[in-house]
Amino acid sequence: MTGLTWQKIMPVLITVLMVTSTVVVGGCSSIDVTRAHDPDAQFRAMSSWTWLSSNTQKADQRTENEDRFDDTHVRDAIRSELISKGYPQTQQTPDFHVTYHEGLDFDVGVTTFREQYGYGYRAWWSGFGRSGAMTEKTSFMTRTLERVLTIDLLTPGPDKELMWRGIARFEYEAEADATARAHRIRSAVAKILETFPPENHD
Image (cartoon, rainbow, N blue to C red):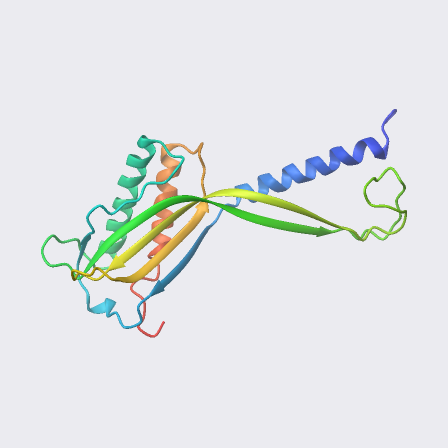
């Protein structure tokens, strides 16, 4: 420990703790979902659906190959989920139309730590002023690039009115391989449609 002092050790320790925290949070990426629907829509009386023409909105910052890959897997996942719930796809007279939109957005988070160790410190712990018990607050801001997937169900009439919407937000993993990305898409679609069809009183 020759030559090492707390003045040298503390900045390194703080850096290690911050990096460790980032890794843990990143490794626990979740899928956040919100849903809303028209309470007057009789979803359980419906039995079939079809795609709305020109139904996708491409996301920024993704390549054309990514768009094609994601488009295929999103459509396959939606089709599979709806069929499993008893809603087959049809080209005849559908009870509702399905469309979806994709995009990227930044989620900004602020985490505040209150330091209250109960013991004093000296001037080498710069930025906190006088010696005394540690009771300061430190805040860290994070910006996470998120992928946003929105699934909309619309009425079959000429007006095509929105009657159900589900939105999933999850971390955009630019370096993920094809298998991981396909799994993430299926998971997001399954979670969006998890409670469909909704009860009329929801």
